[in-house]
Amino acid sequence: MVIGHLAGGLTIARTELRRSLRQVTGRLSQILGLGFGLFVFSAGAVAVSYLLVTQSPDLSGFTIGAGVRSAITFQWLFVVAIITQRVVTVNPRPDAGDHLLTTVRPTTAVAGLILAELARIAAYIGVPVLVVTLALAYTTGSVATVPLVALAVALLFASGVVLAHVLGLAIKLAVARIPTLARHRTVLGTLAAVLLFGGYTVIQSSGGGTSGFGLVPVGWAADLAALALPVGTSPAHAAGGVAATGLVVVAGVPLASRVATAFWFGDSVTPEIETEEATVDGVGTDPLASGLGLLGRLPLGSGQSGHIAQRTILLARRAPAKLSYLILPFVIAGSFLLQAVFGELTVPTAAFAPGFAVALPWVAGAAFTLNPLGDEGRVLPLTLTSPVDGRTYLRGLVRPGVVIGGLVLPAVPVLALATDYALGEAALMLAVAGLGIPTVTAVATGIGMLFPRTDAVRVARGREATPPTLTAMVLYSVCVGLTAGVPVAAGLAPDAVRAVTAALVGGLLAFPFAYVGGPLTGVAEGFASLGQSIAGLDTAVVQWGGLLAPVVLGVVLALASARFAARYVERYTL
Image 1 (cartoon, one colour):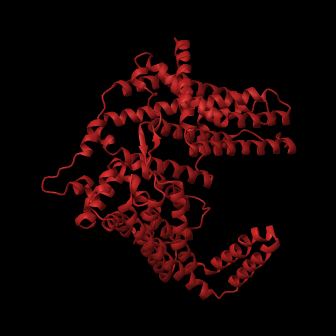
Image 2 (cartoon, rainbow, N blue to C red):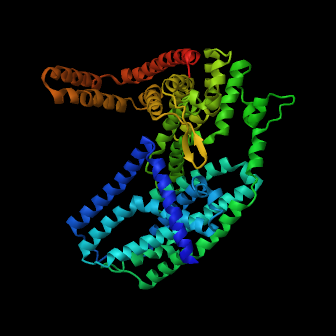
């Protein structure tokens, strides 16, 4: 029976991997992302192996203690959390599951999903781990290290993947059966992601809070990997690690099979919840405002532009996957904030308020106006043929970011005063952020029209989104940096802005011309002279110039972008 499940699972795993490879190689961006990930792992492995072979460190004084076991357990838990997230969002069921599950048992299908995930992990870390292990074996002269490390790594990842499938399938089952979880699944998922990555960053950066993990037997696999090395190990701990990880695998596969059977073949409340969410009570009220719930109370105005603003928010609310790229910067910032409260800080608290003053306009523009044509989706032909003129459509697009950003704006001076900034500096950040919100939101419309994405990107199995193009994101971020980041930096640290600008102009810009030489030497000398002139400017000139010039530039860009976007949408053809 076990051999039959394993043989069928291998067939399913091969099919899953073949389809995954076909999807990855179908897009250049995914190929580049995969290549970058492989490069990072390979470069790290080569660097570590080179140091091991050339330095030949003495390991005789090293002991596998509670600290090492705690670190292994902590990283194992993080891997379990990441794969659990993948099971929930990407691989909750095999491809063509309705057909597959009529020919194989659920246990075989679960085994196939687990084996496929293990193969994906091996594709990333298999060769790098082998290279480092061979270098370690060569340095210590212990050939037995290779199979022992391979066994320890295999047990750790196998147990982690099996446990992740139990947890992930259990989460999917709970969402499918409990209406409250199904109704708030997006908010709960976002909160879980923030807590996961934020907590991991805090603990990892502070180096504390993991000592208790050494008691978890899974981390004892470190003793197994080091049994043949000239270091202090515990054979009893090694045996306990093998037993613990093996128990997770042996008990986890049938448990995952039972949970998967209940999820795959049981009834679900999700369709009813989705129908309920898509239904609005339009009796005596505005249907769009009713569909927005509490967000319908925002002062978005009336008339055609007000309805366009409400519909823009409704589209974003019903397709939260396209806004997922906005979460990561705030997860990182939140982790640093927690780290400042509970542990050692690697980023000074003085960076919080200026960073927030720049990030708020960025989000206000990126959330609603950076891909307006792509956000329309299938109704784009109706929008283009509607009697709404370009200026009205543009006002409706810009208004959600301006209104929501304005409601969050008071947090800028509060955060500035809480981090020991003077009242004048807090007012400066408030003014820059307040002017930056409508400015960059208008700029985003033009960039989004110029570089639209109308084809959906597959973000999870059965789920697609239309995020802005990479070109639009980069260009928009540069504009935000110039129109909001430079004024904040010039107002708070003019000396640093002067030094950086002088180095960029006199060094970076001059370098290619000086490198070519010949007739371009004069150009290089001109840039170098200009850099020296910038370095000699008075602090007041840098401060006021850095404040006023980017603001004027931002207003000009906003007006030009808004005019371009309004005309572009009126003349756009499919």
